[in-house]
Image (cartoon, rainbow, N blue to C red; front, side, top):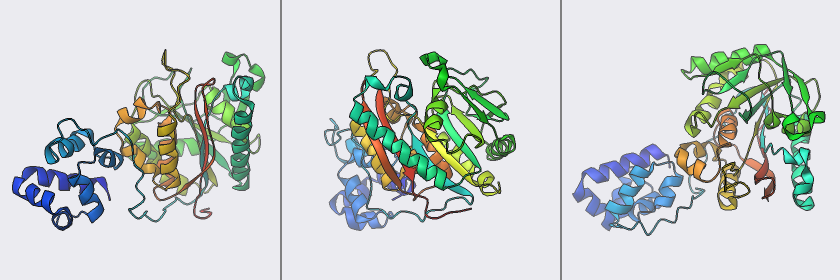
Length: 366
């Protein structure tokens, strides 16, 4: 059930104490008049904040339900866990024309720079996932590849997402003492300019840059998966240290849909980053397997775009500051598309929960 229906029902109950009393006595029958199915009426009547937060309701609304509707001053029914809703029907996929591939993969530098720090069997499983995703990308025969990554060492003028409009993109792993892994890639300035125009046409902010110095965020996944060296690439860079908006990331991705559909090219989209990953002092090396599993299950259930409805703190608290990279991809793909997890490995030495996922587009859309 969509979050707007849930929120409207809750606020209607909050304004009418007599209606609330009847609802608490007969949730299913009273809830039907508010547009609620029996399952979600029960969730609200029980004060289940975990389910409501998972549906994208903000905490100001969910605590109203828990503390006022259920008289739970201690909020004891909430465990802070997120729930994957499989009861509501999925919308029919609406993938934009010309999008022939979409997926996500972590960009952990140690995987190439010093893989020996992690357990060899885990490294092997993760690399096998990359191999599967590379094969899927090659089979899609793209004309251009869009790649999202977050800013690590670059410097930009604004805090907006950045689209690389240059005709060449150069990337370095010198920071990791591996200049032998540097990349020099063809750009796609015409495609990039169309993406910039589409974002601005949707009323969103974007920074265009003809000189995006690629770092490990793009170098590692492209070294592992680029199907051919001459494939043009458009880098899209997020800046979570300056701005962090899951909803904005999904909206940015959705704004690209028409430009992709009208490109006349076979377009592939690769998101990079995370999953859980902290660079904070005292937190590096921690992996939030439980929340990573929640994200992967949401992708598998075809509900990846719903993740954007979570409050930013929910993602940041679980080490997901790179997940907006994935949400741009998910916004482009649209709701209702299921993901297939090729690999997930929690690796403490290299500092995160690393994942490889292909979005199962319903059919070729070119």
